[in-house]
Amino acid sequence: MQILDKEQLRKNLDEVIWNIERARISVSEHHIVKLVTVAKYTPIENIRTLYELGQRAFGENQVQQLKERTQALKELPLEWHMIGTLQKNKINNLIDLHPSLMQSLDSIDLATELNKKLEAKAQKMHCLLQINSANEESKSGVSPHQAIHAYQQIKESCTHIILKGVMSIGAHSEDKKVIQQSFETTYSIYDTLKKEGATICSMGMSGDYEMAIRCGSNLVRVGSALFKS
Ligand SMILES: *Cc1c(COP(=O)(O)O)cnc(C)c1O
Image 1 (tube, rainbow, N blue to C red):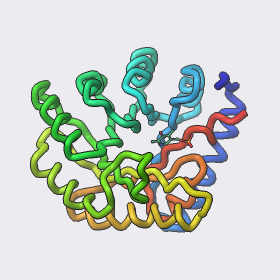
Image 2 (spheres, rainbow, N blue to C red; image 1 turned 135 degrees about the vertical axis):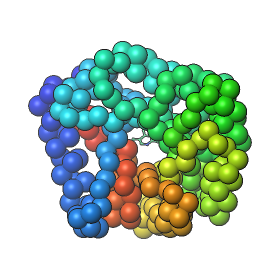
Image 3 (cartoon, rainbow, N blue to C red; image 1 turned 135 degrees about the horizontal axis):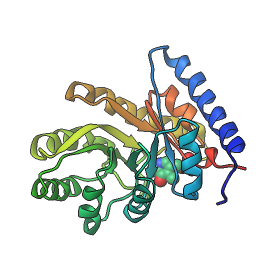
Image 4 (cartoon, rainbow, N blue to C red; image 1 turned 180 degrees about the horizontal axis):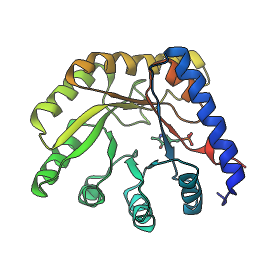
């Protein structure tokens, strides 16, 4: 992907922010939505420009890429989110990067390993439990019927993981109803977990963030829509 000039990025960002605004107001004036820019496809210069335009939160799906970018941009007060599958042999690397939010905690097994390594380093990490809301083989995450139990179990036994809510990727489908249903499934789990302290419901990407917000998402992860030319 190419380096975009500031005016193009401003136009894209304005459009996304406006769409978010319209969708969130349709839920409630009080429904606040956070935008995390998914920078994985784009040159680092675009991140710098988006920062100049006011954007603060950025997401990456690979530990190596996250490391390169946090180091290259360490002079900027950015917030970094890990959003991709975490391999167990990369756990220590991720801990050392101190991400603001690890969104892709996708199994009790991974939570146990992560917790062990956090404990050894005397650190804590904010995480979201990833839910595979449409039970798709291609996606990671806990299945909807195990999600509440898994959340409670991690909360109880992994004291170095601070669970903040849930994350999900919309169903891979052409049918908007199927996608909406996957968001509704995640939202209803989130709604149940509010009494466990959950405050973040991360769902919605470039193709479906408005629908996700109308289904209750309060954090969207948007990539390609911001980097079109
Ligand atoms: C790439 C990615 C996104 C952003 O995707 P776009 O369709 O480019 O907006 C969001 N969430 C996750 C987990 C991703 O891997």
